[in-house]
Image (cartoon, rainbow, N blue to C red; front, side, top):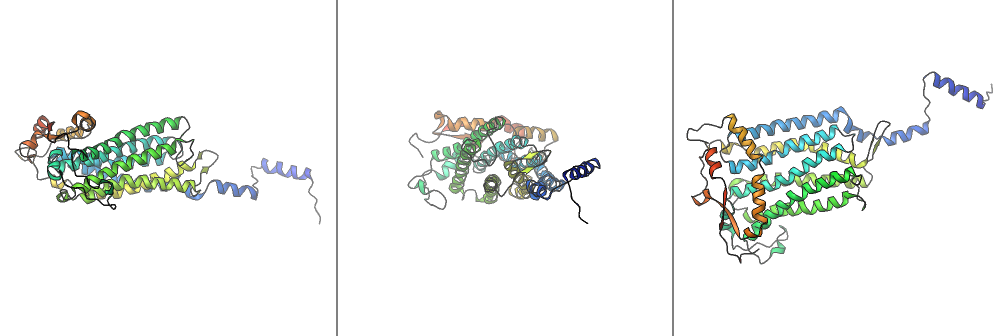
Length: 406
């Protein structure tokens, strides 16, 4: 039986199909739909991804917050523990910030603002780790007493080949501090510029176009963070023998890996995105660009990494070494009021501001910071919190001659 389908019959069939609520889908339409919403990027939007990342994030928060509390509970060496607590806060800030960015994954602007907070804090961590090493060794004057005049070992492996023929001096310590402090200025500045460019539509993650701000922000940030970490390494290279009693290798590795590794894995994802390995997501409800998808993967990875960082930092900066150091003559631990005041003290950036003035002001270039406790024979292991606050200010003392240069 031969059936001839006329245009009139086809129109009647289509009219009945749509009136019945059925949908006609051509095979040619199926392929673009599958191609525009690939399976892998959608994983970041599922409850599975949020649950997995949330489990690692909240576990890391519990581990780190307990460690911070114990440091504040046995707050017997404020000059050291102030910097330790600041370093430990990198886990809650990195983890919770990345998790929030993942929860708001479909909004292409929110993650930029969340990541800005995270990126600014990493500069603060590098500075505090260097300051912690200073405190371990007794301050600037004590360090200079040990290394002044010694020749800098020239090595291409350690990046000191350009320092051949030079000796350690106050200028060397100035460079280490200045290089870390400049990152504390450059990073927040770049974060502010990123937010402004994002609002103006001139910034998109992974866009290396010369007309996009991402390229220039990445270059400046890479130079700044590399200089900061290089200065940190130079200081460790110069004082590694003095730092042996404090087990610096794990501490140095953790601080450098958390910051530098997160940066380079972000760069790797940006390169993969540029190569087309990370596609965009399009649907009827929203559209997510390739850069946002790459940032989503970065945040998901950081959520998992912070759990392992919390475990490693718990061993690297243990509170147990401070348990035997009493805060008063009766051997009592700090009450809750002292813990809260200690936390407030650790969050006060006043010491960083004073350090910046001391290291960048031309008037102090040939002076070292020497506390009153150093002149009286070194810091006491048994001192009260109130006594410390009364004598904790550093006194600048002329120690080196003006011809001592780096």
